Amino acid sequence: MKGRVLSGMQPSGKLHLGNLFGALQNWVRLQEEYDCFYFIADWHALTSNYADVSEIRSNIKDILIDWLAAGLDPKKSTIFIQSRLPEHAELHLLLSMITPLPWLERVPTYKEKQDEIKDRDLCTYGFLGYPVLQAADILIYRAGYVPVGVDQLPHLEITREITRRFNNFYGHIFPEPQALLTEYPKIIGIDGRKMSKSYGNAVFLSDIPEEVERKMKIMITDPARARRTDPGNPDVCPLHSLHKVFGKKDDIERIDRNCRDASIGCTDHKDMLIKEALAILKPFSEKRKELEARPDQLDKVIASGVEKAKAVASETMAMVREAMKI
Ligand code: TRP
Image (cartoon, rainbow, N blue to C red; front, side, top):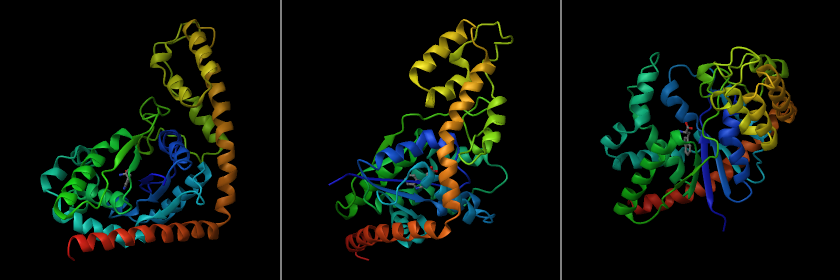
């Protein structure tokens, strides 16, 4: 029996290189060894974007296309949309009964997001309950492993606490899920900060080659290297940091030396990076075009994913209702 992996992403638009190297490639690898469940967390998107739902459907379609183009394979993995499985909501409700409020109030993302997002009111019941919904997503499939980035660790920790509390009250139903940390937690964007859609510094998987080139040309390098003849410091250079993620080891080592002795310039390095990035993105854009032309294919992927997910989720709910005498 293969171990079960579960993970989800909010549909918040097109995916970028940070999502690809930070999560998606890891998800693709896990398909070979685990029984994987991957879902689009549209209810989670509503916890902070409840007022403007105009883009949610197109975002779901975009993320699904990016997933499939990146190599998530519906033959190997169960791929679905959260809101198509009302079982998540039922389990969320039942878990909410046993989750102490202080546990939710001390989750770091709760305060951080409220401070960060000023244009929306996040003092809602749903937003506070975000981690309970996430716990339900994981437990409904009795998943053992959850591949996530470090930013999600507090959510996983509270899932584990809720799991122990549930098992303690009603009997051992759920395994305690473990995080599978991804190899590249931080991908640098073109301005030197963490790559993120909201910073406007991201290179998207769906960007056309001219756009990739334009963005990478303006990428920040070692700020102390003012002239071509100045030696550079790759340790503080965002270009190096991004390149390390997908470049060949030998090339990276050579460029590192050549930057320190000023035998290559930032523009030379950028040209190499652009060439490699375009080579990586080419097969995506081809697959993307194919998928965009076949919406019926996308519907089929989701329909079969929902069916497979439903089989497990309804079995879990039967166990939970029995355990809670409901
Ligand atoms: N909170 C996750 C994120 O924003 C998305 C998510 C929702 C998730 N439910 C999950 C991730 C369950 C892992 C497991 O990235």
